[in-house]
Image (tube, rainbow over all chains, first blue to last red; front, side, top):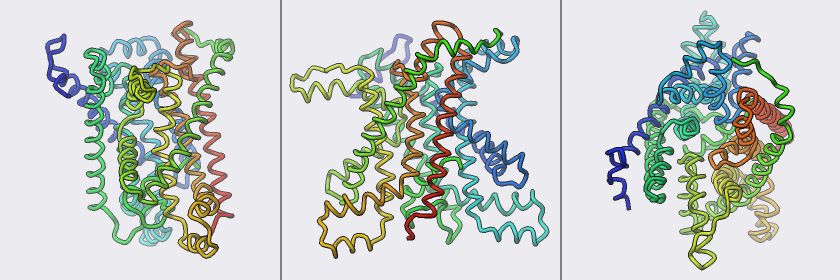
Length: 260
Length: 231
């Protein structure tokens, strides 16, 4: 059923090349988006737990804004609205960025900042799940605020939240498909293009679905390996409402945690 | 850069309002279908009904692994064909993007709700089942009157959070060119060229509704923390 993928397209490639190029953009977006999101998310998540009221309020504001606007709307804000509200020359310069970068950069910004807000909540949950004694012991040893976070709190919190980060990894690679609305030819967009060019809708969407499934499996398995390597012996998963569970259950309550 | 003119939003409000009503109707219908179907899926897995439970598990894994936009494309293409087969004459029956959206979101969300219910079912204290047995309740009555009410109640904050996510996800019907809140704004923006004002207003509406709803869920969670069952 997939023979049509190896037929010639109008531009001299094969349809499978379209799919692979779409996969490339999907992976690039998910990979770079993830690391930016992780960096911002850890900082904002720490910000939500510090004593300083101003910092905590700003961190909370960030999470509220980026979690409560749909990704698609955020995508439009970065792509359509930002160049218009920036000063004239800068806005025009952004509009001049040639495709595909003109879509890729706003999509990357959008997905990173959105996912960062979700990661921040997981990091906060991880930090709050640690026993108070950890910070107190660090203080008793003469560690200041920064060193306590750097060497005691954050390393433990990050190890605790690996299972719930799994669903954020799954989330970001699925959300890359939203970038098709601003013209990025990622995997789903390519599948639709192939379906329109060949009328083999079943084949085109089927191939894309199989690729997404494979990505999900790879992402899930790698996160399981990471969790196994980093798991704190004897620790319970964070935000566990249902007692000891299979790994795939643990992520559920935590992912759907709302902003408090 | 043109100066911003937010009076345009007031003129556009009736149309945006009808879009918002569509978004809310879609959210309500999809969460209702999703919750009912999701509960059935969870029970099928809970009772480990052979074959059916494997199919359901595969369906849930599939839905959770592929992007919602791709699911929308799939259903937009598949639903008319399936309906054609069901009606017997084998020819695809076009049903339009609106019904497709309702069917897709209902079936898609069922996968997510069923995972919540399934985890909830496993959390129910064994004593509850034993007490039902001691009272000689039938299996149906046990689940209908004792187990499911507790599961739904305990999981209600998570169910509501998922519904808020669903509300945000309904904006994706944009790819089917439907007139939900975002669709209405984007159609008006193409007519009057005021896309900055339109998209900012829409973002604000989503932000206000979603964060207000999140606050309600948070206070609900707090209240349940005091009166909730001691496990």
